Picture (tube, rainbow, N blue to C red):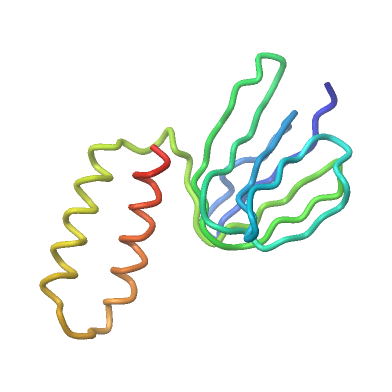
Length: 133
């Protein structure tokens, strides 16, 4: 089966740069699946799971992403994610502990503080990771 070139990058680093036989991304309006020779497309990226299938053994690598853009022409797909990370690098126990910690900090900060928005975003990210793990 022919493969397409896939790049998944965040502002901090490149998460994936390689070939894929199949790709699924969480677009703003729902999931989009890509095969080689997919019609050209550009869309905003939602939050959820990117699944990249590789090789003849169809090994799947999973990433969590939140926000950004995706574009592809059938031979190459570029995913520019605002935030993302490989799910195999995360431990469900540490994610749950971080959620509990953030909930406690937010509860203690009843009023609006300068870092409340950051804390709420971090909590939403951790909850997404927990859901995907």
